[in-house]
Image 1 (tube, rainbow, N blue to C red):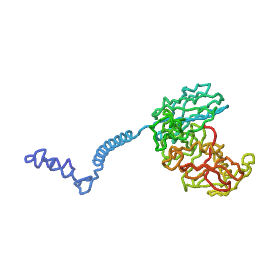
Image 2 (tube, rainbow, N blue to C red; image 1 turned 60 degrees about the horizontal axis):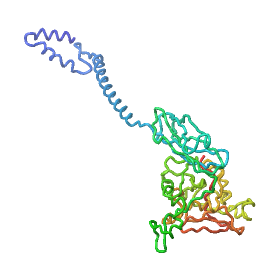
Image 3 (tube, rainbow, N blue to C red; image 1 turned 135 degrees about the horizontal axis):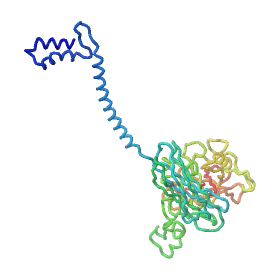
Image 4 (tube, helix red, strand yellow; image 1 turned 30 degrees about the horizontal axis):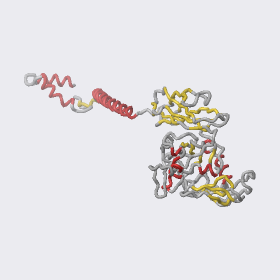
Length: 426
């Protein structure tokens, strides 16, 4: 019909209109939308023209969507940063025989896309492979969804007095979905063939008039501040403990925290390794936290073993704690070993001098004689020791307030407890 109309229109108006005018005349038929009016008065479906038009529009939209998709992909790839692997070292007491475990912790900065692999190998420091430790090498795999793993090195016990020794663990050849950050870490083998005690932490000399750290007369050089680890500038770094102290923060598995500068309220830790004495210490949880190791709990002193209780067992279950059946020192020790704090089951009550070994008399301005950066949630109060006194009903307690208030207490009194164990990190 449109062709006929065009021909008829052309015949009638051939002398008056040009071919362009014919097209203009017929333009309303094409502008009528998806349907056109036929000559017989019926409406003819123009779905074919519509389909063609829709196809063109969809193609344009696809190109637009494709551009958006490419931009989204570029944005995603820009944000898709690979995780970084960092390794940290630890320490272990050598032991007199057998073997102990030295732990290196590997931590990812974030979750990886799938599992990651990285090669590792030990390198001698002052320790010798084969003689002091068993060298290891291999591939460490951290599965998808995890950000931590450990590498264990067996250390050989011996009874020959010697200095502390070191070895180095190196990471290399990471998988394609992993980057390397701190790729080397030092592990320390602590010699335990001689008695080791911390110094006092006092670094200030004094005369009868004033404290004077800069003065070093012949009289002042006889004072505590002139001797020991805390007087040695090479051992007097605050990076791992104030003055001559050196500690390592351990997580719930007994592995060193990747960030040793971590604040307890943000990244809590469960134990502390004393790298000088080789002792490992319990860290209390915050006041009101509940559970087994709430710092507010107090216990009566009780020891049912007649060979070590000084002639009197003490007061059974007289303390104040959430678990009312474990409120004396003996039962608390058993409860902590039952849950394997930091992976160990040989926790015990500390001796008087062991408790004194973590006292830092150089931090008196805080009102505490202990480094709260490593031993948070400590009270200015007595903590029971395992050391009985001259009288069967008395036992030594050690205070961590300043000035020192170490003294004797009756075994049926109640006081705080901080447990200890021998040996270093596995």
